[in-house]
Image (tube, rainbow, N blue to C red; front, side, top):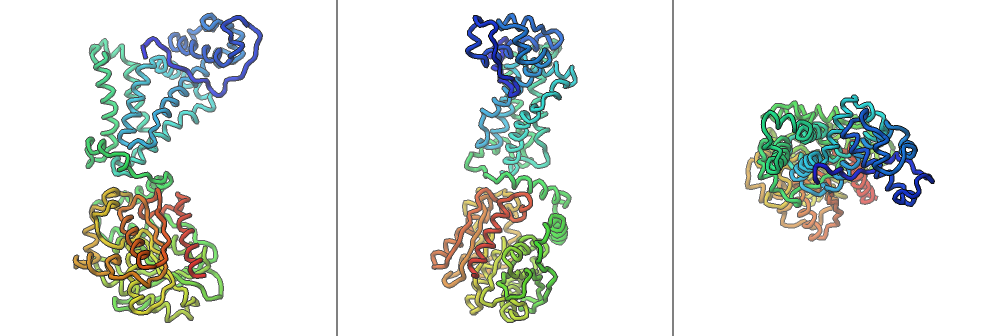
Length: 559
């Protein structure tokens, strides 16, 4: 667009419909009043930008639009009202241009660059817009403050930037701790200065940056600067740009709100903190974020059980009622090295409350102090104890299920194999984003290598802490349940994975193996979700829906 052209102007929603018999012969406006209003706004845009609010004359606007002052006042009230309508329409036009970029499906690095370069192009081609903004700043934003819908219209660009930024963070490309308003300020400041200070800058430093080649270079620099600013230190610009649409995870937007809180709470843990420090931090964060316990659920029951792996504590969550209840033996996640019944309180208390059942949450021994087979032996002993003490616990021995998430899902699947071997009855197995083998060549490990809450880097070390004998990671079915010679005659399974989880394909492979062996399997693919998503229930309604579906399946399976 040439510099002397005025960009198309959008009509603000507040413009009044009008009917008039005046000037019927003037360009047929009576047949198209909206076109008349649009023409008034377009001309007024140019005159206000050139002369300012005080210097603009309604007579000139009326003359150039072949209308009248009376008609202009009918539409816009007075001169200030017309100025406000022009101001509002200028911002609407810009926001519409941003919407037309359609950046929702564009990878975040490229999306941020396109938005920055669009803003640069918009301001460069719409110098009158920049002048209007300068004029309104002279007036201390008084007229913008009177436009009730202005904030709502302009929040769209912040939401757009927030979506791009959060997608970049989730993809492991952008560093966390930035704000969408800050990013908008940076993009706007560079694009605005390019127009507002062009004349004075040229007088001092010459005009080279404002010829076509110079503007093309500056446009590219604006995009580069924004991308480099948000990229993580360990991600190169070329690597960021190389990521294709298929590589970018599509994460439920509500998960981002949880991640902001979660990451901020972990931020104070020093880099290289010990396993013991991580455990303490995990416990503290879980206490801070714990949701209210469902009404009627008793949580004070604690027992110690002897096992070949040493004594183990369990916490019993029991719904109100005197009848014998179904039971779930639950094993918390935490990479075998952290976590407890208390860190996973929200999951176990809700299953107990929603289902009117008992949940036995196991505080198994943690690695590296207690490597395999400690936890495995302790949990198996708990299943035997639950059967033996069913009367004391007031649970139905025919309805004892086992379940867990992540590392706990691994142990649950392994103990289900052991129970089959030893003739200990289990009614069901609930496996939530479980690690069922350790094959890191699966696509999900590559696609989600830098996934939120669980990253592939460091997994080998964690796996060795759990099983110092690395050969067992690929040969022992009680370490890697997928390698069992047979999966027949196992209890019905609910296998829940998450789309954006490195462990996804391990869980899918285990569900396939169970089905192939004739075991009834209910699957949940976890579209849009991440590893550990049940922690996000306060922020993500879908996460709670998933847990409710698991509880319903347990209820139906034990019916």
